[in-house]
Length: 316
Image 1: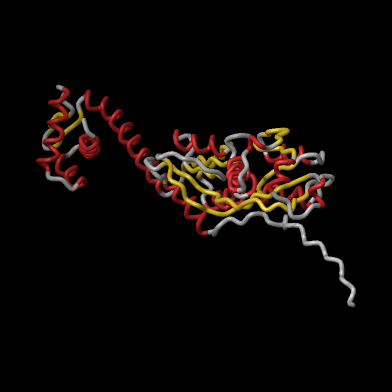
Image 2 (image 1 turned 90 degrees about the horizontal axis):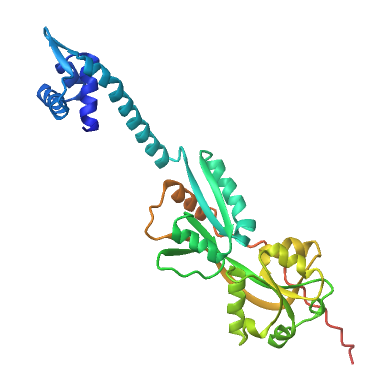
């Protein structure tokens, strides 16, 4: 039994006439007659009786009419739903983001997407770079936004912005007044770090390698699972941390922490997606909005400390 056979049956039943049904369906009367006969022969049941020059539903045909209508109604609803999904009239989009991106870069974009497509349900899953990357691989997230390296042959990576990693201390830390910090100072300091798997941690480890150091050579007091926890730990004044300028800007502006005079590194913020999974209309619309708004800019109110004025040398 096919949907086409059901449509023909319904047209004939509603008009009680083969020729008029054929005209409505833009088919020949013989094609309509053959479809009804095939349906009856297939299921060994008579659906119509000839009455004079017309036809009438049999008792079996009357019983089947309700089922046929219900099936065609459901098929029409399914077709309408697919059309709605393609036209963004309904649907859902699941986005995953590591903490810095989720907290400081995505919220305004999510609101703009919601305003443009209010019928699309947005869900945001947060985690570190590793967990978001795995969620994309496993299909639990459609689009992922990460700050650190993630490698998988199933994942396509697209750069969306740059961010800066900076060194931070509490107001009472000696580094708050120091200039020209270097590798020896890094080795001698006590550190509070983000957890393994975070993009911030991975970027910091890459920086250490570039100056001939490793995490194993540092005095690590704590490893914490969020930017906010790291910032709170710094307020005691005894440790140093490396965080995104975006994550630290508000705390610097409030005087809770100080940006140390230690140049770290810049990093790329990236969008990732599964290479082999279908890109839905909602995904494509979100990407279009993302790139139409231009590259994200880090919240850079936390500028580097100004250089101290040098004492004037009296003229001889």
